[in-house]
Image 1: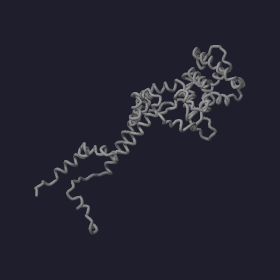
Image 2: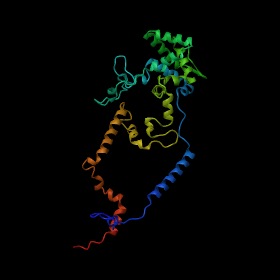
Image 3: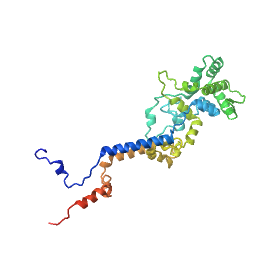
Image 4: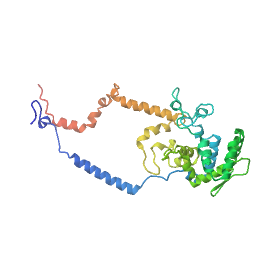
Amino acid sequence: MPRRGQVSQADYYRGVPTSPYDLVKEISVVLAVMLVVVMVLALVLSSPDEPPVTVRSWAHAQPLDFMQTATGELQGTTISADYGPPYNVDADGKDAGDVIGSVQTLGPLAPQEWAGVHQPVDPSQAYVLGPLSLASVGRPRLAHALAAYRGASSAQRRSWLNAYAAALGRARVSGPTVEVPAGNYGPLNVLMQALLEDARGGALDSLLVRSGHFYDTNYTGPLLFLGDGNYFPGLAAAQHLASSQWGMTNETGRYPGQSWLWLFTFWYQIPPFSSAQNADLMVVLIMGLLSTLLVLVPFIPGVRDLPRWLGLPRLIWREHYRLLRETRPPDRGP
């Protein structure tokens, strides 16, 4: 019994068109159909996972590119060597990116510089000299080469590195080794051949993530090292994962990817973003502005009234309005 002053449910809905509806049954049917579809697709399509890309696979697939990249790390000419915050600064205390423009700014906006260096990476030490120092235990020839390189002057190292980098352009890959023409490289060939040997054996992968913690879960080192070479970016391009290939929305192989990210990767396909050095910052700012406008739509006069002016409610609920017209009693006038 309804309380005094209250209207019963039957009276409240009197005159409103209704129909029986089993919500539990519909949910159960939908879940069952989805389960069958997912299982069938999983059996037919299998998994889109690709084998992991490691420094070991890089050293086996393209040993010359590996050695050229490692030499570039010692020269300081790779992407990660001049990346800037959050990884490194140059000798003058400025962001390394200031030298080649890898620090993205837009007018007074420079969030990359504001954040500063909070994950320091010295590529020559992190990817070459540090791992070789750990691997030199019990290897007197390698230990002697390391000592000779560290004891040389900066000018002498630069001379060795320039000569060795040029010689790698004429090197020949023979099975598991890279044969470098004879020249005045000091201890560099011993260091690079040892690094290649450790990489092919899988030891370098472990040495690059060595943190001293019980669990090593920070893979920034090997990822930056892989990104400095041509092997890793080449694999990405082959799978249509590069920025110029709508890579953010793609998946490996022929599988559908993250289609909801099309609005982010769209900007990278058109000028000026497709050629801008600060494209990432520009895209982040534009998407931040668009997201803010979307949140503020209910508060913007004119914009919030567009659905009503365009008649969208009546279009979406046209069935309701049709039934309402059919059941409404005719207007007999006063």
